[in-house]
Length: 111
Image (tube, rainbow, N blue to C red; front, side):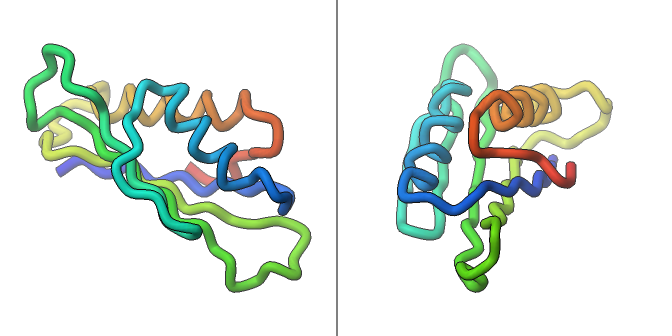
């Protein structure tokens, strides 16, 4: 199973959750679960083998809301064995990483 974590931060604001949804949807991911502190999205089937379809989980850390920033732990994963470093899940991780970097309130602090 391939798993690629990202750690993003953003300045707290009232549109932060929607911004997270927008970033995931910009990567052609379908939101399948959405709560105030957890989002799960999956890749839409489009000729890719089922085991390679990517799921993205985003956990919003609201334990320290008084901080100047909110952390979001993002995990990109699929059932594919990461035999090669350039695999479908890795390419999707790069796509999600770029989408966070291009989005206004977000910055990646660990990958």
